Structures are given as structure tokens and as C-alpha cells.
Image 1 (cartoon, one colour):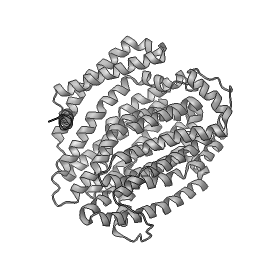
Image 2: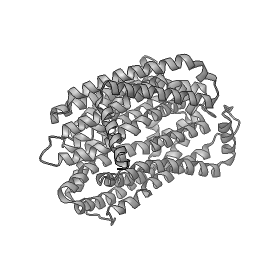
Image 3: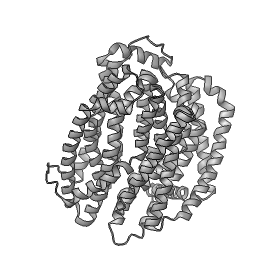
Image 4: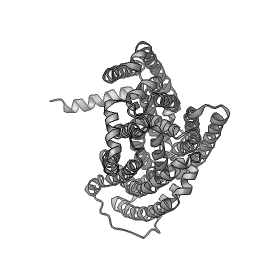
Length: 533
């Protein structure tokens, strides 16, 4: 939660300072290294490594696992250094693909920013391997906080370096941000050098994300020595798992990349609208969906390594029920409260009322796929634990193809604009999840589908009551959200969200939703341990 909130703060600050148009340029430049992070570092590499590393611990003990870790860290450092060099050299044709619709005046700046940020993939790949090692040793807190340090480094480093490079821009931009007043075009410099400062700050954040985990790694017993003996069964297993996982673990991110290319034909502002709405959607996804997935993968990997796999399906099914219980109300809340939330968070400085309206329109459609996104995070990596590595990849091919087809239809045939890109991503993710679930149920045979359907229906009923409360709040206070003071708008919105949350949890309690009762019992046990006597 801390990481996602800081990420949101970063996006809000950057939107207010640079506006949707310039922010869109920065986001396209960051898209390539960020996509590689999702594909290799926090997607394929992390999933494959945790699977093999957990098996090593179960079958050979810590020493065998540490030997594999040393080899993989060395290999990742060498390979990702080469990827970084290639990215710097070929940044120009890469941007021609990612932003084919960009005008020439944006293209050169985007290429420059891309070259600055490409070493980010090296830093975050090493950080992802360290995170996998710690998670497999049942250390979750520090790795989870590591991404918060990325946000801290990118905010502080980006702003300070940008201020040093272009102080006049930041003086005017921060004044406008603090005064909550729109900024007229041409009032102060466009901020190209300040954008370069943000790019360098991204590298500072990536370095912090790696360094903050190293003390915990030493504490669990790992001492790194470079090991170039890569002809090893564990290394081979990890690389073999990575090949299909490169696409399968990051289908949503590939679809976001496709959306970026399509959005460039609309405007650079459309890229910022989609990014900001996706950032808000990622808040509950990161707090709940990714958290459940992070805990689940090492557990099911260890179960799969044993002869008795009877608990594999039930464990996976329970993880998905928990993810649905947590993310379904978030999706309903984001759908109904998209406009007031966007206005409150983003509408400052150069990010104006029309930007808020367009961003809210995209957020509503992204929210429709939130539950599917979270379940994919839990379900897709589990295929690698049972050695069905090709299944998620093939399903993801279909998801990506469907997304491209829907994008073309909704933009060029229906003229649905950037909202069509968000809708196509949600539809593709939903069908991706349903296909994966069907195939996993055939593979392991016991996902407790009946309990899943029952849980979904009960959570849906509770969400209907919650959605009615959100609708009533908008009906009564809709005008207030448009013109009220920012402090009062925040207070009313937080009060409304709190009431909606109580309605949902109360409904889940009355409907006897399993995850709700498990959570209450866990809290009772925790409090019971702390009570005297």
C-alpha cells in the first residue's frame, strides 16, 4: 500500500508540474525499460526464479539454492548490461514503434529520455532476483517496501536534479501546484531539461530499490561471489521457464504497450490520461492482487515439489477467492467515484478539468477488468509450478491478439477514443483469466469451483449495496465535488469511501463470505495473543 500510494503521489506531482502533453512524452520514453522490467525482471525472471529456487530449497536445502542464486545474479548482470547497451543504441527505431503517431518535435526528446532511462532495467532485474530470494526464505516485508524506495528515489532525485538543471521551470511550476491554479501555456519554460532530471531520478530510484534489500539478504545467509558457471541444471530450468513466461506473465503490460502505440495516434495527452487512470487501477491491484500472488507462488511451488499435491488446487482456489473478495469492491468504487477521485488527486497545475474528465472515462473501463487482473496475477505463475509452462504463454498470445483487434475496431471504426483502449484491455484480461482458470481446473482437478462461484455471488451482492451507496453520494454531493474547497471535497470523499467500505464488509459478514470470516478470525487470534493472561 505504501508503495502504491507513493507511486500515485509521483504521478500526481509529475502531472501537475508538466501537464498531460509533456508527461505523455516522459511516459513513452519510460515505457520501453518499464516493459522490459515487467517482462524480464518482475515478470518472467522473478516467476521462473522463485519457482526453481523454492524447489531447490525443498530438495537440496539452502546451500544448493544459494549456489543457483549466485549464478543467476551474475548471468542477469551480464545479460541485462547487454540489453541496456542495445536499448541505448537502438532507442530511435524503438520510439518509432512505440509512438508512431508522435509529431517530430516530441520524437527527439522522447529518444533522449529513453536513452537516459534504459539502465533502469539492469538495476531492477537484480532487485527482482533479490526479492525472489527473500520471498522464498519467507521474508516479505523488506522486498515489498523496496518498490517504495524506488518511488522515493525517483521523486526526490527527479525533482532535485530537475531543479538543478532547470530552476526557472520548477519555480513557476511548483508555485502553480501549491496555489492549485491552472497554468497558461508559455508562462514559463516547457521543461525539457527538467524532464531529463526526472529520467535520471528514475535511475536513482532503481538503485535504491536494489540497495535497500541487501542487508536482509545477508541476514538470511547469502554471500554473493560472481559465478560464471552457467552450465547448470538450475540455471537451465530457470531459463526454460522464462521463455514462455516472458509473454505469459506480462500480457496485461504488453497490452498497455500496444495501447500506448494506438494512443499516440490520438494525442500525447491521451497517453497521460490512460497512464493516470491505469495508475489508480493499479493501486488496489498492487495492494491486494499482487500481495496475494506474492505470498501464493512460493507456497504452491513447494507443494508442487512434493509427491502429495492434494493441497495445490485448494490453496490456489482460496488465494483467488481472497483476491476477488478484496478487489471487487475496489472495482465498484473506482467505477462510481472515478470523476471526483481523479479531480481531487490529479487536477492541479497544468492538469486541467478536461484532463480529469478524460482520465475518469478511461478509469471506469479499466475498473471493469480489475478482478480479472488480480486473478491472473495469482493464477498464471502457478502453471510454472506444475510444469505447464507453455499454457499461459499460448493464452496470452490470444489475449494480445484480441486486444489489438479491439483497439483497431474501437478507435478507427467506432471512434471510441482512448476509452476504447481501456475497454479492450479489460475485455482481453477477463477472457485471459477465464481461459486460464478452465485450463488449470483441468490440470489440477480441484480448484473448488463451487466455493469460488458462491464467494463471487456473495461478494457481488455486497458490492451492489456498496455501489448503491456510492451512487447516492454522487447524487447528493455531485455539485459539491465540482466546486467545493479541496479540503472539504477530500473529507466528504473519504467519509463516503469509509461508509461504502463498511456497507461492503457488513454485507460480506451477513452473507457469510469465507474470506471475511477468515480475516475476522485472524484478527481475533492476533489480538488474543496480545491480551494479558
